[in-house]
Length: 99
Image 1 (cartoon, rainbow, N blue to C red):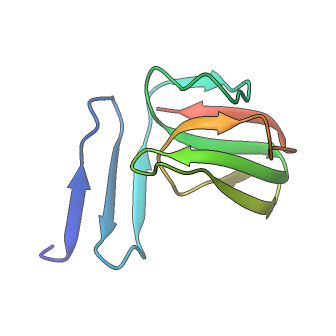
Image 2: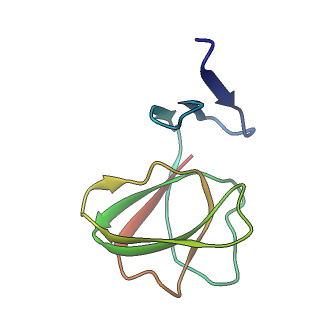
């Protein structure tokens, strides 16, 4: 466990990963529908479930710039904690936020 880092973000779930970033464990207790927006951030951060795949533009919690995940397959759980899903750059639909 010496190589493990736990981040508690004040919500019901948690994230644990190796310092190399190769292991992610997440447990969420709340789920809500995502409406992508270029202006509104989430009240609580979480991870994104992509129901119908395509590109997904997100603002990770610790980033100051957005990232676009290209060609995300349907049924994918993005392994990154996000504070926003942007309308510009997001083509995927049926998105859920797990927190």
